[in-house]
Length: 407
Image (cartoon, rainbow, N blue to C red; front, side, top):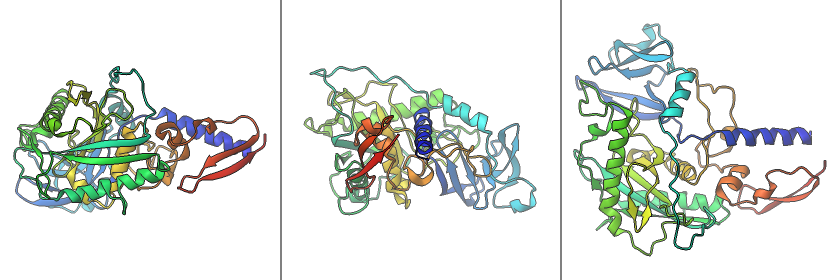
């Protein structure tokens, strides 16, 4: 029985090592869309940045019909989602005879995952003393830059509204979460830019309207991007300009390179408004690399970044999303698998609800993840082939458990 347990754990480790994507899965995120005739429809968004879709509360998939700009109920054809002429809000989908939860095929999803966010080799930089510290230990200074588009007014939230979610020391926050899961080995402090002159958020104002950063549509968004090349150029340009606009405000003595690799440890861009809900790739929460431009803060290059949407701050799971995105930036892989049209996975759930990186709900990550990617546990205990007495940490802040393992 003990040998079976060890084999099962070894298989789990292999599964986790084999997965590396940068997506955050979401279910039933409320959003609103506006029809060309002015009607507002209340729908839900689900998926990740590789594939996301709109649907109603009962599961009928919704897409935009690009011939007229209306949001309509969808059908399936050759593994793709196709638009009908049945306008949402004007007909009961139960009368249409179409299936629920229509999505692209698993094969097409996997192809998107391989090509949409290509992994770019990290720059090989040398620091002044040519030494690299242990990553994810001691203090990490997280930089958050607020951004709005040219057709948006300034943020109305107070800085403390976001500050509590990142920095609170007496309630659930990203700060308290990482103190606990790291056994007080990692302290994350977040600062906000542009530096506010009062209590209210100040943001960098982009030179283009919001539609410029959404997918092109001849009827409803003619200024949008038409391909991934345009998308990447627009995303990286706005982020470069945002960094350059605030870089002089970041104190030279602030340690923004914890692991001493020449790269800024953590930059997040808080974009005003909701995500795009469906079809787009830019205005969705994601992690990527600012590879198009050599952008620096106090001599350190901005490379890894998270793009966040301010609407998520009002979601009950907002802090959990921040924790998930942070651990992704710290090097951890996602663990969830693609879900089929019935909401089922492909038969493998590596850890279910037992790890932050499969189900972001503020639970701890597993001991293996803490050891390999957090460096908060002794990695020597990950694989044992001989009998003996071994001491391991509990996942919670209580210290240790002693295990007597016999061959």
